[in-house]
Length: 119
Image: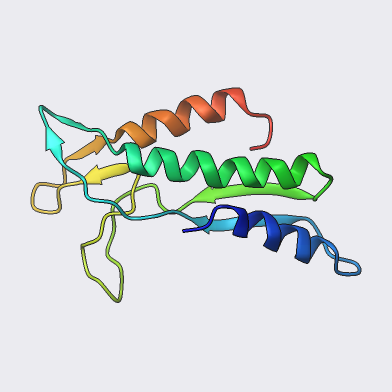
């Protein structure tokens, strides 16, 4: 995992002639989710998002026309190659009961969105 890679790609694509605005449509990572007392503290995912979003903001602050960023993904889901594991979501889904629990990363992202004009 190399957070600066997203910065370099945004800079590269923005240098193309007549390039429209850029939108990061999928960026995320899977980490083990451990449910303890009704809470999933997925600090690794928060660290990942902070670093990658930081690089997107860096590119934007340098003039790259980035108009959106979407975390992969809102809910734990079915991945074609891996099935129901690994977990990418900001919200944990218990597929046997359909119960949803917002992970620490989901709460972090919500707070981030309230404070950033980018999105």
